[in-house]
Length: 48
Image 1: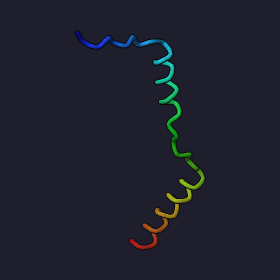
Image 2: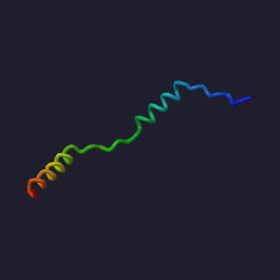
Image 3: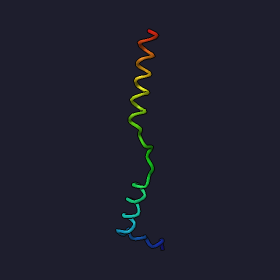
């Protein structure tokens, strides 16, 4: 005799969705990104 199989419920699905949504993504600072790209561009044009 095998083990009884667990029934997948709506609560399990909800828990999984919440877990996926809780993954922390790094906050993008658009102003900092823009300044970084400007610095890289100016470095390229200054020292060809």
